[in-house]
Image 1 (tube, helix red, strand yellow):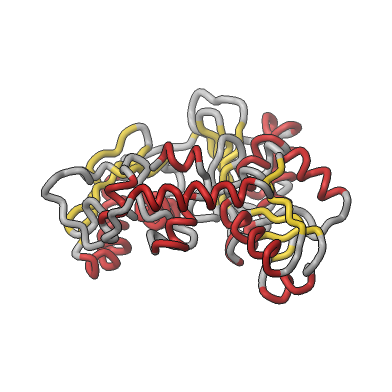
Image 2 (image 1 turned 180 degrees about the horizontal axis):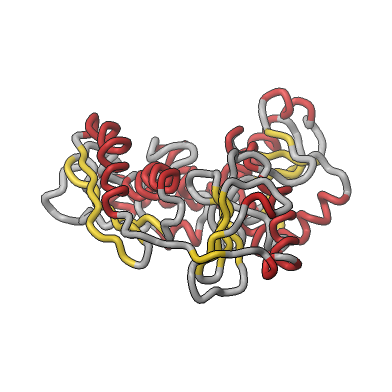
Length: 328
């Protein structure tokens, strides 16, 4: 499925819209799974027909996509700019002048040119088809979404994943590329020109934790300017990094396990190595197509709220065990 998404980025959304696989914003499969495996769980066995529908959907969306550089030029022309993500993601930050796409806004742009974007591209592509066929619009879609924007246009733009400025799953922490340090260093939130409750440096990044998640782009601009000019003169002090194993187990037991019980699932910490927590899902969650999302979003957000210094949270479940009997 991972290779399929690379070739046809719209496939995940099409599988949801046409066949009920996954959700609007959550994939219903893991990257290592085969399409036949995924479809069989939904009692869909005609793989060739599904593949043809995925191919057609990709072709329908592809005609609207424009490269980030061309999209930036169109923005400078003052065309209507619409954000096709959720209101929660919009609150994190958006491109300058963008409005959330909803039914009222769609009517306002009827019959004219419009620029559309989302996080990766498929939601904006689906919106482009609707606006073009139902409202006679002339849409242009940011190819690759905000991930491509951050990679090709503004390397300091924070996104929910990526190589440069990255917002973590709890949405209140972002990490920015910085000069490497030999040991973890804690900073003083009262002596920086941006709002934060904590900041530290580790390896080759600066971590910034804020009291709220809204409007990351403007904060990001201030943070990256500070990194270039004053970060080296900041009164850094050594940061201790204790063993977080018991704290991780407590969060899993008290915050995650109760939500998994309705799925007859269990979760446990199997390893903590180089700051990365490896967690395993068992019971009704073992083999679940949404397991990677559960770990990468829900569990990661809870753990980062309590232990923001964690380097990452990985799924270590044995999902392909033939004895696995997932709830879904």
